Image (cartoon, rainbow, N blue to C red; front, side, top):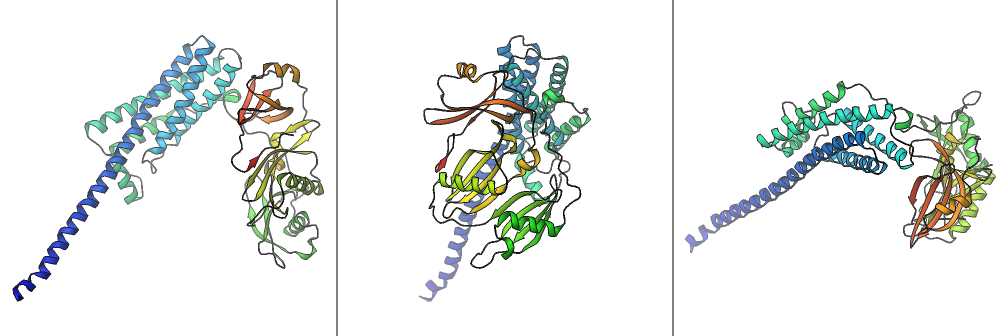
Length: 453
């Protein structure tokens, strides 16, 4: 009996060791499977990147020899898609500590050029001028060089059976740039070559530009105390009960005083307001609040939003979008100059639908861009426009609107809102050429409504 008992403890230990071994084997197998899966994904991203670069190079060359509008559109559209795919592939590789700024800029420039050329060709603006052709050829040469470097690197990866996951693990553990790694060296060599190329000047026609901001400056910057008074009187009709303190100072395009208005009585949350140092305008405001239920509808919310703005001398605004979210209404409004909606100057307001309290104001665009403009008359009449609108679109509204197009340029358009089946769209047609500047799907998500009146 005693001999039997003396084997119990060793037996348990043996079973434990076996169990531990089995568990360790299983864990090792799981880790290996995960590593293999990651390695396969990295290899897929790399070879897709090489393939996309080959397509970009080929389509850039084809663009230079195309003679038909249809083939030019097809080539340029392909370039645009391949650029986006290549950017995604680079982002999927474990190269966080490898500087690829020049490579990424090349892809970004190529995407901008493709988008601009697609717009030009689709609107029938003729073939490419000499400058555009030179830029396309330069992009072709760079894409060809990049593709050759990736091919060489791909061959080394295959011949030496190099591992992408080893790059990832080494990068994470050392938390710094790797040395003497063939994969990393290959990308750094490609980046160095791209760095040696001169900067490409895309020019106005082929690059996006920022819309001109208005010049904002008072006779002299306001003081903190002045900013506090402005914030208090802007938010509360009876501001004498409240106090404000400086919470932060904003820097950047709009230097601001960030004020915190302290709660009183049963209030629990402060109000935060940004006031421009340059001229004392309110740029942004926010009050936190959990809205448990909605007691007023979006139409009543719109009425209260308009009242709020009018009391602060914001007149002639039209609601262009309404969204219901967490028992609040979020309203986007654009000002009008005569009958033209100024989309670049829009503002946003958030209102609680339990009691109609304003919770947020975003006026950065209005502050930076709103000004009186010299607006030309549309050469394309509303009646002429109707003839060219696709009959599948059930038109609900046509009105003049100023927008900023893809390239940052202000364009006078006809805004057309309509539906197809259960889908809602806005199409902005150039008011002079009739070309489609922007097509936007605005089918509202759950609990959303869009005002088209």
